[in-house]
Image (cartoon, rainbow, N blue to C red; front, side, top):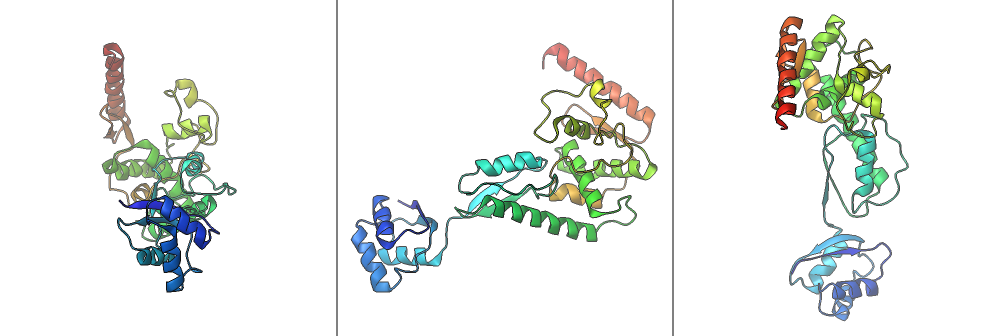
Length: 293
């Protein structure tokens, strides 16, 4: 059967031969040592995680270890995680090595799927994620729609982090981004709940309870119910889609939105229309509590 074997750094030919025999890759360590010696490759075998095919020959095993074609692992980092959460995930990821010495800022890591080989350093992964964010944001900023009320790529990143936390529906991102951009253009406060939650948790994790009226009045530079404009920094690490939504939003005259009870939102152009939507949302919540759903 196929076997995955991790060859450690510094392992000699005898160690590798014994390890492959013990794993059932080859029937006898002597056969592998002889094959490596005859092929003149005993000094060029590379460490790493390798997948050996079923019934692989000694010659093929030597060639595989010389090639350095190690197993490719996958790490998927979900959109909307804070930097604290991403670093915790890196610390839990099997196959990565080393302590995390870098302290990346909030919103500086691109959340997507990364491929890596066994033994890659955790700090190296952070460097890759930061470079991916810088490159992605720069490309999207260069192709942004004209007339946006955003002065810099960082402002776009901050707003994208808010959009990322406001909705889990891909089809809503562009419209929610447009609402916030419309509000910024009119000098209206963003009044975004995720910014308040971030102010309360400091980005250490999700808030484990609903926001209260008192929370909305808690002073913080991140509380967009109390401050004008954008908060001083991102509230999470947004994905590429959220940044694209902010920099190329849909055309709309909406200034408000509220949850609709189905996982999405209902939008409104006027405060009166929005207030009616809020009443319906609160009735839905009350019904849920009454029925115990």
